[in-house]
Length: 148
Image (cartoon, rainbow, N blue to C red; front, side, top):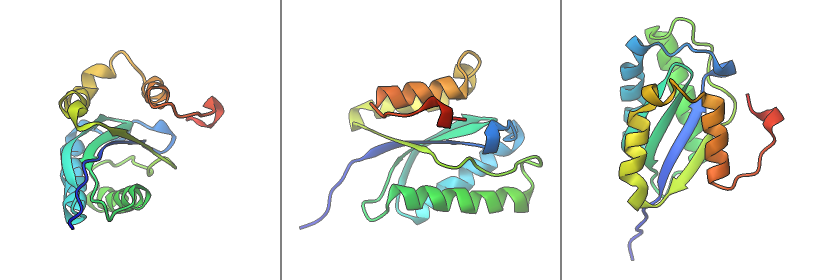
């Protein structure tokens, strides 16, 4: 019997100390690099996007890949890429931790649009408020003192 899965993830993580270091001119290069990581791990990228202090990845993760290891690999490899290519000169690394939220496949189109519109969205909503909203939406208990 074959293995069949359809687990849609939205992965969210930010820059260290929420520094606004991911300047627009380098974002596309970073996104393409992360897409290559996902492709090499047999994950399907639906959308990646973000703003200067964080990014969102909408992806199907291959069933043999643990989300924690995938995100660790993305962060480590992309940090090296950013430094080697100097696409974000003031980048100091990624935050510790991340958010990984699952969705029904029926939410895919809305999720893709949400990530596509991050720049507009963050003209009125901060990353912190957005992140708290995602945690609450998914019923995840948290202590605000541990959020950046």
